[in-house]
Image (cartoon, rainbow, N blue to C red; front, side):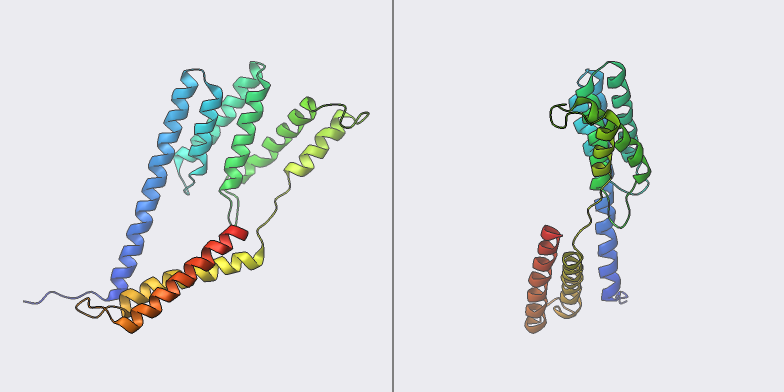
Length: 217
């Protein structure tokens, strides 16, 4: 009796799916751990430490993750509690952490981006209220707040050329790994030196392009 052999592309696809599942589980677990750490810090009354943990939890974004949304909600709650207690620095820290976490997860779109206008409006007024009046004497509070809001609302995008470089590098990098499995090894998993060398060079070049693109994008 002979075992049925699966096509190599099916094995590669299965490996990629498994890798994605592992990454997704890791993101969920780490986000949950950070969220629980923030709740413990908040219970002890350490707002700033709680804010740091909640920001970490919110940055570990995965679509439909309940922990990311819960972390953002906790940052909102911390900001509200700090405002009620008259703790201005904690209000600012919580709002900046929430804004930073949301912007850190942006790609082609901004997950939870609908929260940004309210956050930035409150931050702008808080910054206008706490800044040194000698910097721009005679300027009204509303004008100061508008100045801060205009700058907070800016969304500087990545450099297109470097994004393309990173994407091409990613395709070359992943493609070389698939090519190594499909062409660099024979049916008995013996190395085919020529194809293996080509795949190795392509892998190194692709990875270098990807890292350079990310660095300068």
